[in-house]
Amino acid sequence: MRGLLAARGGRRWALFAQLAVACALVAALAVGLASCGGETPTAREPQAEAEGGEGGVRLPPGLSEEDLEGLNLQDLEGGAGGSAGGGSAQGTEGREAPDPARTAEISGARFTVVDVTRNDSNKKVIASGQREVLGDYLEVELAVENVGDGLVDFSQYSFRLESPSIQAEDYRSYYGDNGVLGKYVSDHTISAVLLDYADLTPVLYKLKRKEVLEGVFLFYDLNPQSAEENAGFTADIAGGQAFLVIHKARGEDAGEEVRIGLAGLMD
Image (cartoon, rainbow, N blue to C red; front, side, top):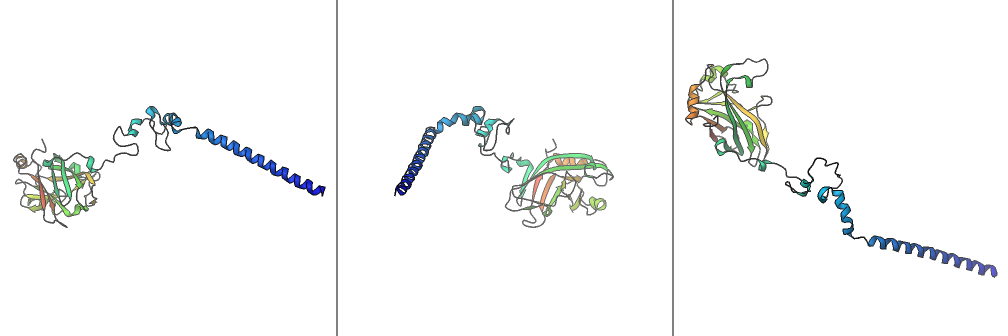
């Protein structure tokens, strides 16, 4: 009997000891929670500002001041255009409006004459080792923007030069039907191939919506049977009778064309 009572007493003391330990743990946890709960968000603000750098700017997550070294931190606050969360993409909306006198639209494509120059040789359009030919050549640089709802297919366009001083029949005997520097269209109109400045290849690809193409040009021989200057063409420009004609030869709107006067573009 005494042994049984002793065993029961031992179990009671063990239970009391466990309860004491649990109470101590609860008390310690309560003290820790109380100390954490006493800190307010405003108490952390100076630390956050310090991490942000000059002026209290908050850096994007995962970035440090070293990552942004050399960048004006005010840009992140939107003070230099855009918010701290991102920048402003420059699409076609960011471009300057083209000069109406230099621009024409046809079948979803906006063509702008960038520059017009006269050259005294064909050097600009020949590859290494080809023969350079002196003469009178007109170079027309273009920029093209797709402002329509579909693709712009350059293979469907004809790029023509119209002037009373151009004798289009003369081009057949010299260039045949090549059409790179001049191909017969009608009595006073020739066509040329749109070329890429980078490699002188014909531009025959497609332009996406809102895409802008630059660095392309046309190169016309103004006097295919002589190395002399075509003085009549000079007079045609001054008199407003020389035009770049962009003609839709195939596809939707086939047969339509627009004209850009060349007067004043070489002043």
